[in-house]
Length: 139
Image (cartoon, rainbow, N blue to C red):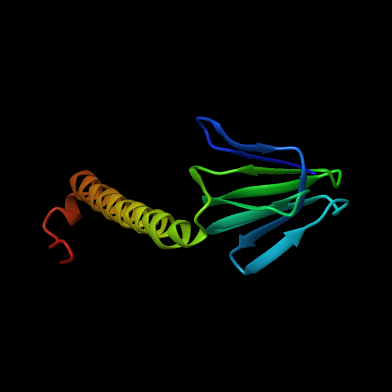
């Protein structure tokens, strides 16, 4: 099977002889063998592992993304960020921790942005509606 892992900036993994691919979606891990039915799923922040035709395992940490199986012979992964590595423990401890921290920071920034957006709309409404000008904003 052909396995390709891409980010917006580069192709991180391009192999032609993947005998097995193991990935993880939010509800759990799954495997893909040659001849697998066409498939599309969302990936969790996880380590994607594949075994080549010689039985050697390889790994790449992915920051979520999408995985598709096409024609039973191609596994395509699109992810915002990917870090290949031979040391599975390092990928799991360091890289996945960093990916999860970044996701949490993005969520916090999004929440703050939404809060500011709602506050701006409330202020605009107070300015547009005279009866709301004297209302005290919620704390």
